[in-house]
Image (cartoon, rainbow, N blue to C red; front, side, top):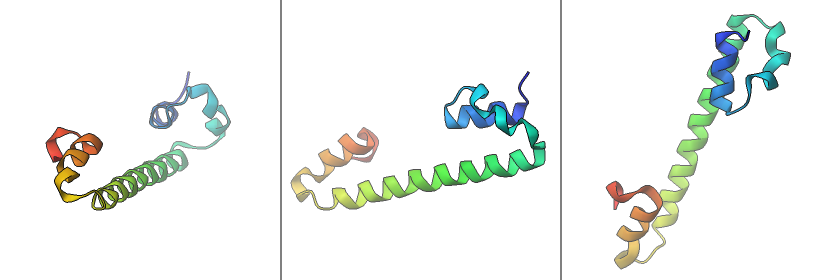
Length: 78
């Protein structure tokens, strides 16, 4: 049976928990630190991508910018 911290990490990484079996040797405190670091990295990457897309939309001609934003970010930001 997999430990909860490994199961949570596997879900976060969209991996089968079996792929993280090599981490079973580490204690929960270490795994929690690793999981927190992974979470922070994913959030930072998501933010960087969103910021990059927002900057790219600025280069779309103004009459089309709202439509471009809606296509990229969804209708709530057009």
